Amino acid sequence: MSKSRDPRPWSTKKPQNFVLSVVLIIVAIMLVRQGLDYIDQGVGGFVPYAMILGGPTLAAYYTWYFTIRKFEGE
Image (cartoon, rainbow, N blue to C red; front, top):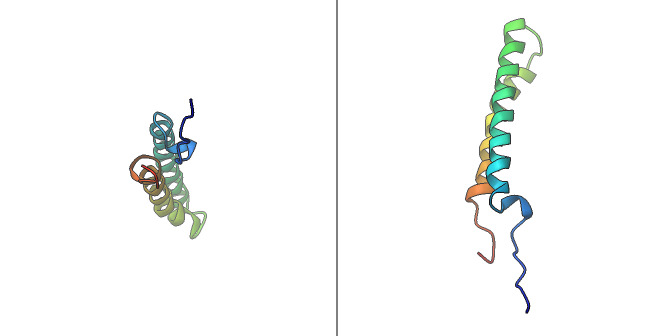
């Protein structure tokens, strides 16, 4: 009995992809909140703005990568 090897990465299989997506969304929320705290304190210069823009952007990309993207062989 030979099984064909699944070409998808481990992180894109269910339920791992949902768990990783939830973790990334939580991290994005934490980054935005921390960025807003830095802006409120008046410290950090460009970094808080990068956190506010970059956190949700990365979370959206990796959520797409883990849950929506189709891999070859599917």
